[in-house]
Amino acid sequence: MGAGLGLFLLLPVILAVAWMIRRYLGGPVLFHQVRPGLRGRPFRMIKFRTMRDAVGLDGQPLPDAERLTPFGRFLRSTSLDELPELWNVLKGDMSLVGPRPLLMEYLPLYTPEQARRHEVRPGITGWAQVNGRNALSWEDKFRLDVWYVDNQSLWLDLKILYLTVKKVLVRDGISAEGEATMSKFTGRHE
Image (cartoon, rainbow, N blue to C red; front, side, top):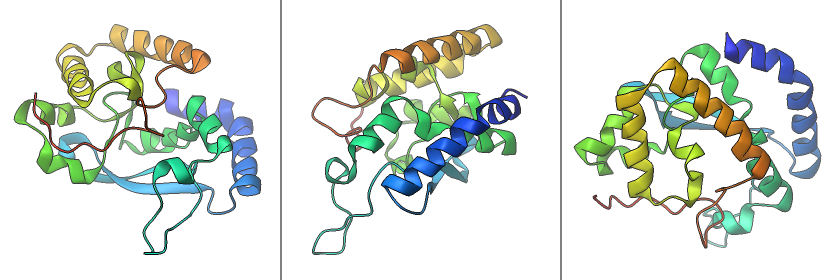
């Protein structure tokens, strides 16, 4: 219900952001990527696009820092790029609150304890996001995700939603130090 209400109330914002992305970054406006959901099952996550489609001489995408535009940084810092994920919540692939869905390629790299983050649906926001977001180390992020799995409740979810609004307004923890977004997870163990 929250996702449906959010989509309805935020429709003017969603349409304005889509128009600005089309104008400043071109098409496509939306970014789709397969991510692991509940129990690691894949689903197609949808977000607003924040990067240019720039490739190097080898045909591979340039690093995030070179593809992320000032407009894309703004979308990320305000979390406006996450708004289309409300559709994933309506479909049942995601929840409003839960561990953020990471990349499929990370699944075999998790320790058994880190993999517990997939015992719940991934969320648009989560305990790790309100406690540091991308400024956290991978180990801290996974520790906070598993803590959420063990302590989830309606009251905790409401607290996380409140703290998310506060974090977005302050624009804290948007990127890891020295990174445009977050460094790649390489399977370091706790």
